[in-house]
Structure formats: structure tokens, C-alpha cells
Image 1: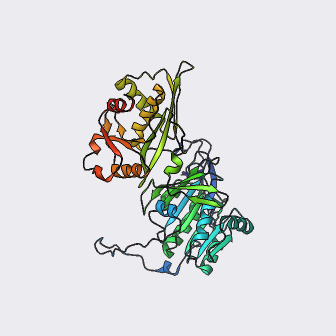
Image 2: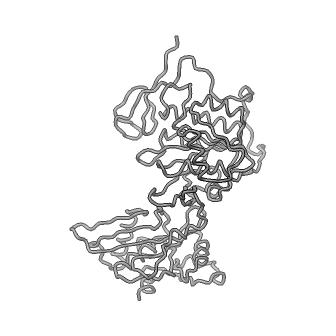
Image 3: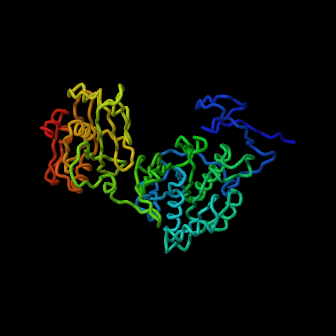
Length: 458
């Protein structure tokens, strides 16, 4: 009789070991190893097999001999999702969507399944019953697509039997952690089950050309649950994020083999589902009745999309011996660096002051082009002098206090012009090649921080 094969897997990162270890050598987590059966005795072939499996192995070809074909992308009828995916769905692609519980992953995917026209869509749920999905579908739309099918199943063997009968053109799995394969003798959601089920769906997608969406749970650290290899296997990794106490949701591209990474799509969650936000600046700029100190507007880029965001700063006297430094939506270490530049190069004594920074709208920004807006907001709060709401900034600040150029400046200027701003501060090095006649706003080039403060505060 064949011996059952088993191994020990780290539940945090998926590291495999032949024996139990107290500390994972990969992620340094303690007591995360569990034993899992990796192969049943006498297990057969994989769950998904096509008639092409028995074909002769392919031979290597010269790159010049390979025919180039233009991939036609499938529109999802969702402009925000199409933008994040790089123009639409690619045949045979596997897309992984992760997010916190209750953020709206299932709603987004069901909305996608109900809105795709002229294509057969199969929505497979391992978490909800058909009646629950039907109730949500009636809430989301009054005109569902005729070719949207619902299947509640968790066994990959049964799922592939139904796929062969139905032959869908788009497949949605909710969620990958609920599936289990008969070839792995461990519980659903374990490292080996998630890896095997994903591998079977990946083979199916590549052999048939059917796009597959996988909804994935996340851990308490915010990473997608399961082995890290899961993100390497799929073509696209999307993160659905936002604050459950607010209506806005952000769909962020982390990895994309068919488009730009770090692309951004914005939705608003309502009782009737997710509404696309085509102009994100409307939620990132607050409507103020009067000018307030500590607020400055920056022109930033997320992927290929220009946006105007509001940076808010509060500078106050430190109540205790050690001043507080806190930033929401921005890197605290970079904020400390900018504060050091202000103190060293401009003479502002901020070492004894509490400084709090917030990016409005609940998004996280890594674009260095908001440096100048952050410094303007900090000095505005420190001096209690408001910055005009018709002025915006787009420049990076160096350690010597110089104003550095940023990329794709014309897109930033055009977005500010479209939203009615009257003046934008940019680096002098960005002015070369810009035709000012195209824009109605004033473009001001600066080279040092002192120039900006003299123009703003006199």
C-alpha cells in the first residue's frame, strides 16, 4: 500500500518543510507550522484536463518566428474596472481580488456578472446560497444579464463538470479559500488547498482562454491569505480597499501583466450597489465656505490618472516633552524628513511642535509631487495664514531645500486647469517645453522653498 505523503506548511507565508519547526525561516513567524497531507494514496490525474493534454510536447521556437497577434480585450461594462485592468479583460487571464471582510468584493463581482452583455458568465459562490445571491442581485440591478448563471459549490471536481456542460465565457470564484480539491487531503483554506485549487483554475484558464476572477480573503496584516506564490501565479492582483464607515472604495492594481501597475479605480458604495466615480477630485477636495489655514491642494498621479488631492496639516504646541508626529495617508518618515528640511533650510522651529498630517478622502499617496503642498500646509498652519483654495502645487522637495521636477507635469496642469484653479506652483526645471497659451491658469516656476513662501505669505 502506498504511503501517504505529508509535509509541514507555514500558515503565514506558505513555506514548506519536511519536519515541524518552531520558527519559520522565511517569514520569522512562531508556531505557524501545521501538518498537511499533500497527496492521497493512488490519487489520479488533475481535475482539469482537456483533449490537448495528450499532445506532443511543444518545441522551442526563435522569437523572430513566433507570430505576433493583437490581443482583443473584453469590455466589462465597468469603466473603472476596465481602466484598472489596462483596457479590459484579456482572454485566459486570472485576476485575484483581495480586500477586508464587508468592503464590497462580492458586490463588485456580482455587479460585473450581471452587467456583462452577450457573454455567458458563471458566478460560483462557496459562501452564500442561491437565494442570498438572488436577493443581492435584485438590490443591485433591475435588468440583469440573461446569460448570468449562479452555482453554489465548493468541490473543484464538481465545478469543472458544470463548466464543461455550460461552457462559460467568464468565470468568477467567490472565494478561492472556500474551494477544495479531492487530490489534497486537507481542509479548505489551507495553504496546500489554496495552491492546488488555484493551479487547477490557472490550467483551465490558459487552456480554454476563459478569463477567471478569484476573490481572496486577507489576513489580519492586510495581505492576501494563503501562500505568497498565489500572487505570483495569477496575471493580475487587485486590492479593494476603503473605510467601511465611508461610502468610497478604491480598487488598486498591485500587479498587472497586461497594463499599468498602481492604477486606480474609485467607487461609491450605495444601497443599490457600487457607483463609478469618474471624477475622483470631487471626493478628494472638500467644499469649504471660507479659507482655512493648514490646507493646501496638490496635483498627483495614481497610475495614469491625474487627481487633485487636499493635504491637511495641524501644527500646535507640544503638550509633553516629546512632540508628536502623525500622518494619515502619507509616509511618516518622509514627513519627518520634510520637517527637518524646513527647520534646517528655512529656520522654522518645529522641533518643539506637534505636527499632524492628513490626506483627505482616505487614500494613501506615495507620489513625491505632493511634497511642496505638504510644506505649504504645515507653514500655513504654523503661521495661521490660509493658502488660497485656487492655488495648487506639483513639485518634489530635496534635502537641500531645492524644488525638484516631477514627471508628466502637463497632465497635472491640465487637470488643475479643468477644475478651475487659477495658479499652480511647479519646479523651474519643469517649465521647459510647456506652452502656457494652452492653459488659462498661471504657471509659476520656483527653484527654492524660500521662493514659494515669499510668494505665498510675503
